[in-house]
Length: 246
Image 1 (cartoon, rainbow, N blue to C red):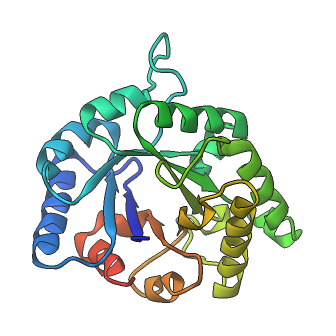
Image 2: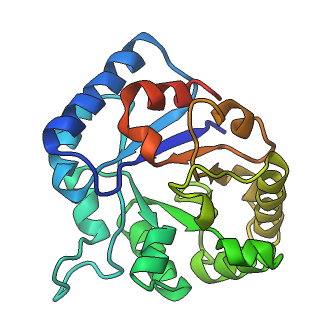
């Protein structure tokens, strides 16, 4: 499978800064194929100009979240249908910042993933444990519960990507050991094998303080098929170095 490097810009930047960032990525990509699919997930207000900029290029576009419904009285929300209409191919669902800050639970993430599928988007479904859960040796139990509750039974590798992001590692500069990452990714792969015939084709991403210095070591771990990158995706040079670490 072709690895995936996804840049989650979160609530950062302006249209101008986002445009400059993507122009830098496009310039680098025109000179060299790093051997991975490249995805950028800007804030909603930047989707249209970025979509225009990357049209007919290898760079993919994604939303950072979507509502479970196609439309209706949901002030402030964006649907998967709208994301597809603006030019997105992917959408992130279940990010820990949504699970924690917006009290999102597995059921709503499941419905969002279904909506993404129904509207032609690939859902990047995020999983991860808190530091307390890690210390109490509950990581695999938490991941299993999230897998069972967040991934539609009809999922396939064509429309689903799984991202393991330990909550305690996001934006903190802390990262699990390579052995800890391997343990969780191997566990996710084994759990997928129990439920999906094409389980070996699901792309499993790691996210959580990935940077140019640790990316190569992380991506060399078995069953790590790319990364969901936060802060390091906001700088063209850092993001491109990560893309070239596979």
